[in-house]
Length: 196
Image 1: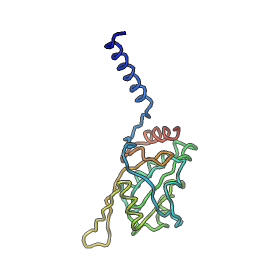
Image 2: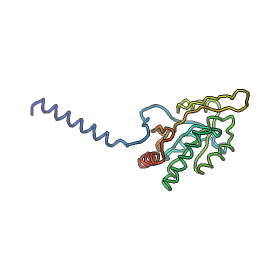
Image 3: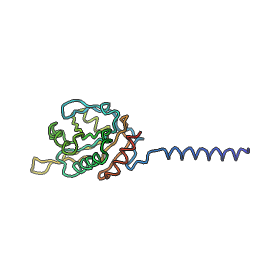
Image 4: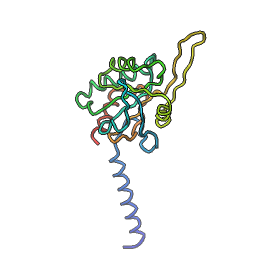
């Protein structure tokens, strides 16, 4: 076989291998961020005062959402959508853990957080942190929070990151999910990760 024909055959074979590899990649609706270095371990307290780390959620698909209980729009919208996702998925949602991490630990006490997340789903877990552990978590997951005091008032709001991160069963950040993603899209992507 001439060298030119052999080279073309090898090139065609390589192209087919690439295409088959691409076709095996999950067809996520959300943004795949698995090639980034974000995420990793954390140390945050649950509403019972117990320290939770990433390893505590091994074997579950984990959704991390950063918000606060006084949020007028983004947080209740997102948690409400995730509540509908849980209902639609039924028993398979037991393989998913939603973590609501407060962006406002000053006002969001453990008891307030516990009551808040239970309004949406009893399986949702709220976490809070302070000090170096909290700052390390925000940095690792690229979450931002900025407090805005209302002039002449003790009331303040918190601007915060609005999307969710979804971690696979091994704890690796895989997806970024924007606000208003949609119940069917959530169900699609969570089922793909649960099947891995």
